[in-house]
Image 1 (cartoon, each protein chain N blue to C red):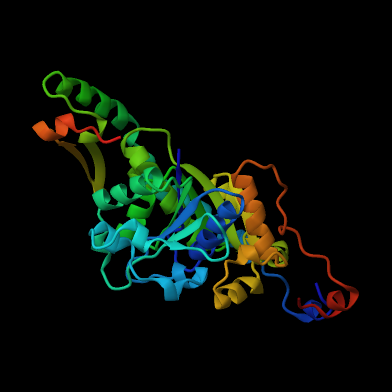
Image 2: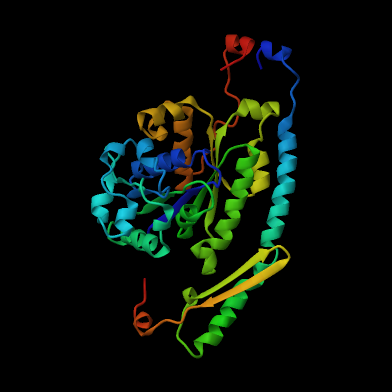
Length: 272
Length: 92
């Protein structure tokens, strides 16, 4: 039985696509057949983050409109086995996403392609694309930054998950929610300049799946089109790796929420 | 904290302010959306039972939606009666 996971946030620029790319890559690395779908119609970016932008021929909307088959549109990842990408359309508008169309594609991915995990990368906002991305979800990764507008928007999205998802409408078990706190800077939180992990947990009141530290590796990875989870020497990569293991049931302590130990000189002169 | 940081302005502790503001606004926004619909699932179930006495429908054919606009609350009920074909075709 396949699980549909939406990566959502409300606010833009908090790390949804980065999280979708690394999360899907991590699941596939661990042997699960995984597909990651870009729901950001008109502003596709997942292909760039995954490094397959030059291999896009057909897209999600083409498949919904029966202009291409899923076989034609799915892009097989070149680095990780079991991983496929379904890109968004760059030309159509978001009205092309219909409930019936999305449902048909999702059930085909589950049944004919035997995917075990379907990761839906939501666009920002709470309009059609975002609503469609979360509608069929079984679980949700809510990506939040320790910053007021992001936390408020995440709370709004949590409200939408609990009232306007298919599970809510059919009075089934609710969508399982997970918090991903991204761009966290422990030193700034310790100084009192940034909301702490505990502050955000207290406000949103959903289980914490992982904390991803603010890291230069994220930009470097997206520059290169390689999901940051594949950079095993980076703090962000390790954080995503832990997050995937936790999602799959491992009980791991949270790293990267304490200030990293600095050498004597760094401590004296600051920075780092 | 580095040596130079000691000469910077004293810590503002703006995070505490952020948390306080968030707690207030989030509580306010939750209040206006989560207060009443707890009777909606029961309402939906009972409606389903009544309609089923006459027409074979399932959960997915009944939509109950509560909206607020200003001082009004709008309860929207939408029951789709299946036609002959759909009654035989059962998705999943």
